[in-house]
Image 1 (cartoon, one colour):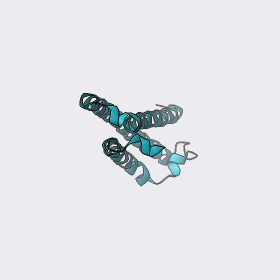
Image 2 (spheres, one colour):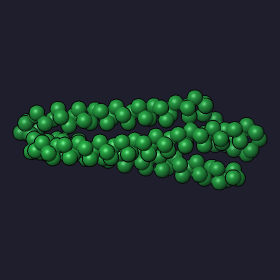
Image 3 (cartoon, one colour):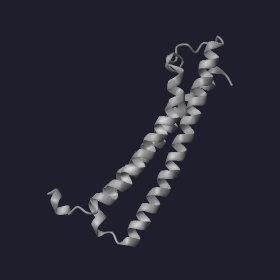
Image 4 (tube, one colour):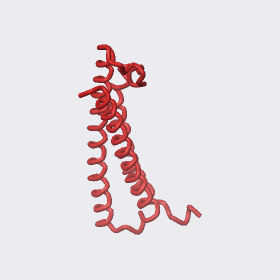
Length: 136
């Protein structure tokens, strides 16, 4: 693979990871809106279906984001290695950033997504006990 192809692929992986992340945030916002606006109107079966579907989509999104950020880490380290070997890649910001940033990124982002998932489930069940008239 040429240097140009590697940099282009790195850019595409970064874009794909951010697209997955934005998609997951959209799922979370939708779930929170359902809990806030319709939480008290949902029957037990609909709550089970809503939480089950949300959990399934969240697990799928989190695993996709995790996989993309692991690929991001591997490609960033490959670009740094090629730049150290003398390739003309020293102009890239990924070469100048500390290596630990790429090793910690998948772990920290994965933990953040799991915390978002747990907090959204907690929020969903907490707002069910609030009367919607209190928001006026």
